[in-house]
Length: 281
Image 1 (tube, rainbow, N blue to C red):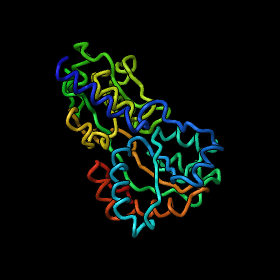
Image 2 (image 1 turned 180 degrees about the vertical axis):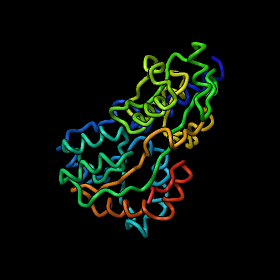
Image 3 (image 1 turned 30 degrees about the horizontal axis):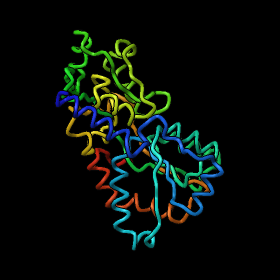
């Protein structure tokens, strides 16, 4: 087996392994009633957009280090990652989440309008889109998409990965960027649609797709940065990708403290390291 194939297989396992959130079957395995019962004695459960995965894994480490001052020590938090609209749909149908960290503002506003939240949503970060290809791919990535156009002209590009635009904000932004570049019609027939942006990243990093458009934040994780070529897409090529959080009606004191923790200076610096910027004022 070639070294590149070994890398691609290892990357796929990283993305679809221990943290099942990036795989299609990320839904909670228990029924709503069972999960609610477990949540009352078990960990706090927070729904998180897939684009935030690596950032929130690091955030959890920060939280655990500061337990004594932030949550009294001993309280557990678990994340369920997925496409924003899928998480919103689950919440509307009774999923026992304490809070939602979404990749858009529309989903949290919808929950607020339905009286499912304890307060209006708050935008906490703005994401960026990245054009990526595995280092073994023949597709050259650049900010103008010139390499992508060449790959199409030369019939090198067989599959192109994005998150489903109907489910994931980063998928919608990817479609807008491709339309802006005049490539949407040509790429459409070659799309490999992920159920969320994490699965789209898996397609491209593993070589199942020759290139893709994903969240820049996912390329900043140590698990992917070594196997991808990355070009950041101009923010002018798509609508802003604002990430908003909202506390839900069943939010526990622990979840409230964690949400407050994510608005602090440490979290702001962490998000910046993962490719997010401060929200527009």
